Length: 143
Image (cartoon, rainbow, N blue to C red):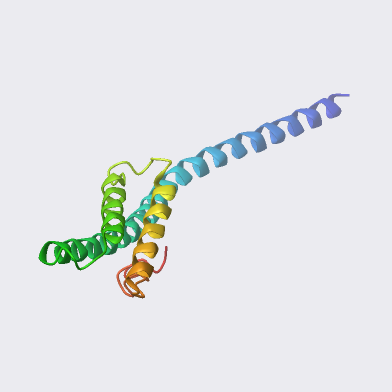
């Protein structure tokens, strides 16, 4: 009977050791995951933020050119088109650049893109944001 008891104690200690090592492994993995998750999140956020800023800059640049043309020649665009250009400016001005956690950013970007397409179509121009070929991916290939 003593042998059975000793065997039971050995198995209990093996089970306890296994559980303790699993817990330690989990804790180590969790800590490492937090660190690498933050780093990866920062890199992805930087890339996505750059792409959004680049696209918004494209639309703002077009808006600036159109507004300059309107100042030089107020009759260059119809009043309807001028109103659309002003609405695009309003949309761009309302975009929450300093509030990345705003839940409405995607809807706002969709509205900006739509307004831009409407203006381009009304001008008879084939303008489209395609992204700068090198800047959006340069140095971020591994992300």
